[in-house]
Image 1: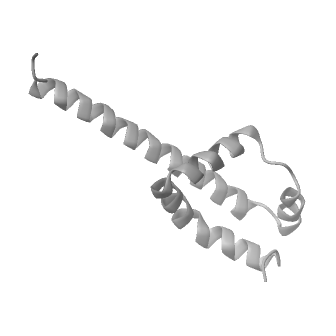
Image 2 (image 1 turned 60 degrees about the vertical axis):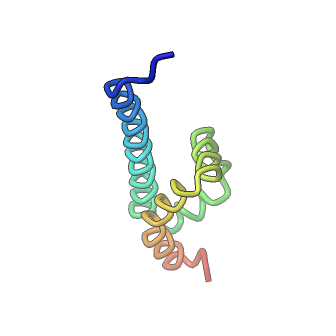
Length: 94
C-alpha cells in the first residue's frame, strides 16, 4: 500500500481550506444581508416582518447555525450590535 504523497496531502489541505474559506464567505454574505435589512428597514417594517414565517433559505441557515457552534458565534458576533440596537430603538425588546 502506498502512502499518500506530499502533493496529494497538499491538494487535500487546499480543498479543506477552500471549503472553510467558502463557508466564511457565505457567513459574511449572510451577516451583511441581515445587517443591511436591519439598517435599511423602518421600525414599522421590522414589526410587520416579525410575524412572517421564515423562508426556506432562512430555515436552512438557522439549521446550519444550530449545528455549527463556531459559525454561529462568528455570525452572531457580527450582526448582534446592529440588530440589538435597532430592536431596542424600535421598542421590540425592553
